[in-house]
Image 1 (spheres, rainbow, N blue to C red):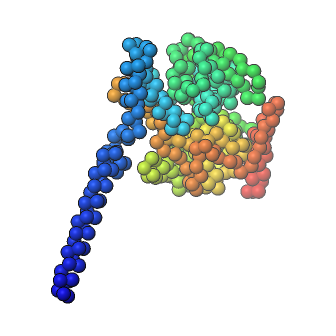
Image 2 (image 1 turned 45 degrees about the vertical axis):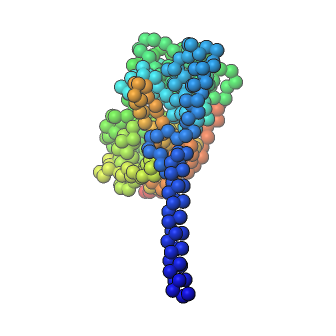
Image 3 (image 1 turned 90 degrees about the vertical axis):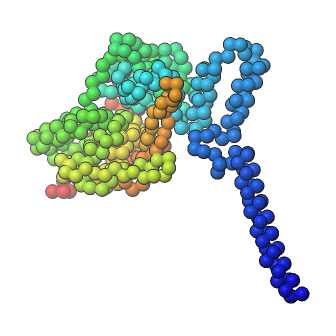
Length: 398
């Protein structure tokens, strides 16, 4: 009797183990059949996309105009809808013609009228017209909301679609229906497109050796222009700098790293986190020319992207006090990718953080000292306050 029980116990355990294996295998195969995420290869459509094919089949069979269905237009509409559902303000679809233009020279539309735009809460907003540009001369201002382009509404339009409509050849014109800040009625402004000067740095010497250093954007030659301005500052026996980043829409990341390195000894300028959670650090380049120059930084609500990187780095390193109002909050990394038919998509692939981990995207940089400019003010209150703070620092350092 004892020997019989001893035999059946391991036999039953073996049967149970086999049953467990069979159930596990069945569940795995069932998961594969219903499209379980564990079995789906990268890039393979999930089952939720099956209804797109169902809709096309229904339209093809039953729509009143089924004989004239435009598969290309419907496909483009599907892609636009997909990108719009991402809640990514920079996600855009470009047809083949638009993609060809943007991939050759992806600089926004300031080649045409000389202004930089972004999306804010679904609205197309001017961050800043470039100094001396056709946009500035025509009356485009920072904060203008573009309601229509050549009579076509900008509601539900993507950023790059708007950019492609505004861009154009020198000498041609574009009609923009804009709503100025603090105004109730929009107006139409006609801008004649032109060749835009790309100077990005300007130095003006004020009283008592204070230099007003304006950086308008971050391009290929910005660091070179900055080095020239710093030499002029030293030749004028300058004592301190107001680094003015107001209405600066940003630009090239490598450019702002070079500029920040002029003012910092070492450490991080920023770090970037991509879709896979991988972190990339952007370190200070050694040997900057302005590490010993006292500075304060000016920002406003239209300081965006690379200008937020610079102000955030200088703040986190305790290198400068930042003065003004909270910045725009554009701290994302965007990419333009081609599709097989020659069209393309633009979307966000990463986000920028300041050295101490402040997220820039959607948050912006909050200054150390808040100084607002009243809408009806004719005086540059922010610059006056910045000069006052810098002069006080210079006195304390003596």
